[in-house]
Length: 147
Image (cartoon, rainbow, N blue to C red; front, side):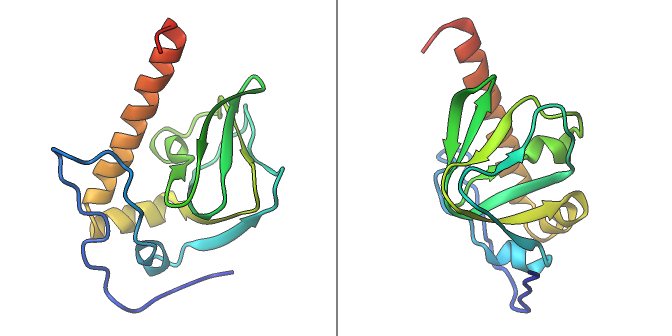
C-alpha cells in the first residue's frame, strides 16, 4: 500500500543537541511525503534474518519488534522507533534477527527515500546517527559485561 501526502512537513524531527534522547515520536508525515510503503508484519514474522542484506530501514507506526542475537532478545522497539538503519548506512549482511513481537505496521524506507527525507528534514540524519551511536554503546556495554 502506497501512501502520499501533499502538505509540507514543518520541522518533523527538530533536534536539541543538549536534550535529544530519541524518545520523541516521529512525525509520520515525513515518510508519507516520500511515498514510503506502509507494510504489515503479523506477530511472529521474522522481518530481518542474520546473513541476509537489505537496503531498507523501517519506522514503526504501530506494534513492537524484538531484536535477537543468537536467539537472545537484546532490545525491543515500538511506535516511532527505527530499525534496519544500518542497511542504509552500510549494506552488509544482518547480524541480528528482527521479529514482530506483535502485529506491526511500519513504513519501509529505501536508501533513495532516506536521501529525500534528509534533504527535506536534515535533522533526521542526525537522529539516525544518534540511534546508531546509542545502539553501538549498548552493545559495547553488553559485551564488556557492564550493566
